Length: 290
Image (cartoon, rainbow, N blue to C red; front, top):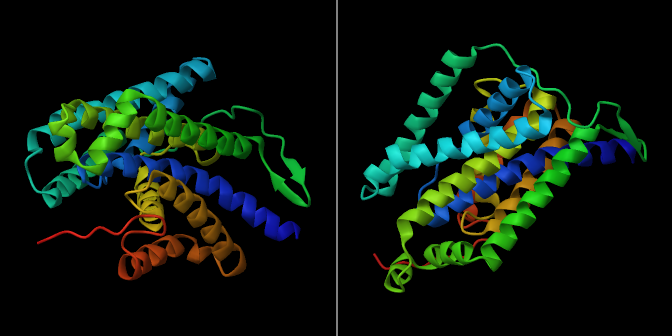
């Protein structure tokens, strides 16, 4: 019982990170129909900024806010400088651009911060807690709480605010949204800012556990994409649930089979979903006339 609960808690912690990244994928996809493969680098930037600000003696709450803000600004710059000029290109061209951006950002991060991992102090202490035979550190609890609050906040934003409703309208039918007078371009810019902020949050809250490294975003980004595909790229709720499902499955695969299967589990699920149910578990099938 204790072992199973330990795997479950570990999976939920990882799943919370994947859920935040997957939600970022979904926001951009619904606004632009583009899969942003630079999403994982926003995670890395959040962690790197957090480590830098903490190293310079800034209080953790201030460093937390600045790291997310700086990464959101980076997301805005990427949209303005790379995505917006190519807005009329095909989706595959835009996807290739995001892959190139991912490589560029990672290279710049290695140049600026170096290859050595950067430590980040724990936000809430390091003394582990015992729960029914399982052990969980306070930072893991903070990760779960932060993820739930972030997802809940995004849900309120999309359901209750005018910009959020406008983004939902664009996701449903961009042409109809334009005919109703909704300006799509500012909403695309906002989607990149929100997506970058969510991924930065994931990087900030996980950095005390994993340290901050220039290449940490690649694998996290791919797993976040796998979670988004699992839940459904067109469903925000589905992508979040996909993140938690993927984290738990990955944890049990590592615990009961072998740690060598931990990363493989995400990609096996990705391939199976693309073959058997491309719209995801919670996504809606779309019929298009060719």
